[in-house]
Length: 254
Image (cartoon, rainbow, N blue to C red; front, side, top):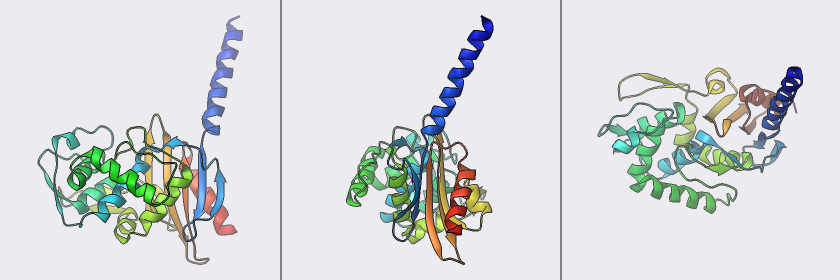
């Protein structure tokens, strides 16, 4: 009898694993034309975690200068999750905060920037949704600037937002840096996106993770020999590094 119950438990665990795997989605788009090259459930809605910060960063950069100064609020310092450890009333430049947001995924930096640009996170979120609507991005809804909440999008929408963000030269430069020496305490922030750090063909990217969303990842690739430029986005993919390299290899070989 005990063996029977043991087998039932294993059966349910196995099915939960299969469901988690089948719930993933991904897309590869041509960065110049937005043409879909490879996809799996690319229009399926998911929580996107810190891929949110791609759009947060673009809206910040469109509405500020890198040398503008930001006074950090107490609310910003109390954000959970990834942090660059800001202090209340600390004065920081937009440049440092955007680097902290994109390279280290700092939630405190994200909120500090949003409050500086719009007066509050809530008002900034309205700007994010308005800008997405202007670009015809219909399957995305932001509720915060960090990705800690229920920000919903699709792999295809995220890829398009990433492509749009990369057209901003400041965003492209920052998101593609393997490291950055900040002026807050002089420490070097290493980019959490290890393909940007280790893979010469990956020129920009953003990581994301929460327990609710699973692992989320966006990577921009470029191959000099073929002049191919494309974007890979995976949502709820536990083997994301491996999948991104595999998908990139398929496109390079076509």
